[in-house]
Length: 341
Image 1: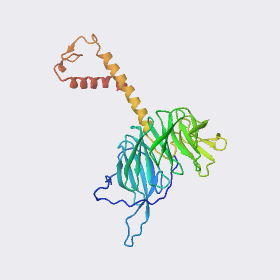
Image 2: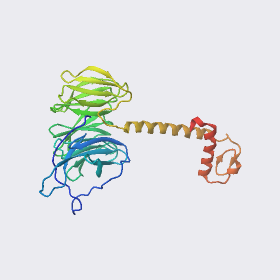
Image 3: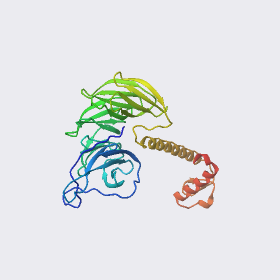
C-alpha cells in the first residue's frame, strides 16, 4: 500500500478535562512488531493535529503518524516533527492494516485476530466504532471521496465494503484466495486486490461492488499500489521476487520486473504471515518431539522402571516429582539426539 499523504485540521485535543476520553501516553520505544504506518497529515494513514494555540490563538497543523503494533494490540500515535510517541490507543487483537480518511478525521485499523475494524477519531484519539468484517481482515483502503472503506479478509477470500457515514458493512465481495493488499484508483472507480493464494489480482468496480476482471500475476502477490495518474498498478510478487505492472486501461500485465529476494509490498514491514509460518513449524516440531517421547516410553521398552509410572533406566530418579523426571530425561536425550530437539 502506497504511503498516503493527507492534510487536515481537526479539533484540538486537551488532556486532564473530565468527561473527555483519555489516551495513555507512551514515551518509550515500541516493543511490538510495527506492521503499518498511517500519517494523519502525512505518511501511510495520516491526519493533521493542531499544535497548542499561541497567545494570539493561532493554530498550526502538525503531522501525526498512526502505527499498528501487532503484538501489543495497540496503535501508536507519533508526532512526526519531534519523532515522539504522543499517545497509545488500544484496539482489537493483532492490528495490521491502517488507513486514514482523506479529510484526516478518521483512521481505520484492521484487527486480524478479532475479525473487526476499529475506527479512530483523530480529534480525541479514541475508538468510536468497532465494525465486524470477514475472517482475518488484513488491509484497508479508503476511497478518495472518503465514503467507502475496502477491507481484505484474508481468511474468507472476500472484501468487505464499509459505509463510512454509518460504519456498517454494506457489501461483501468474493475475490481470490487469501486477499491481502488493496489499493483504489485516484478516481475512485476501481479497487485492485492482491490474492496471495491465487496468484491473481481482482479488479472491483466500486460503483457496483463486483469483480470485473481477474488478472494473473506472479507467485504470491502481496502488496499493490496505484500510480498517481491511475494508469498503472504495481503488484509485488513475494515468491518469485518480481513486480507486475498492470495497465489499468486493459487490465493486463504489460511488464514483469525482477527485484530483490523476499520483497515486501506497499512499504509495510508486515511480519504476521512470517509469524504464522514460524508458529506452524514450531507446532510440527513439537508434534515430532511428543511422538518420539511416546515411542521411547511405550510399555515394555525399558523393563527396569522407576516409580510413578515412568519407565526408564535410572533408579536414582525413583520417587522424584514428575516434572523433574521429565526434564532430566529430556536433558539426557538432548545430548544423545542433538538434531531432534
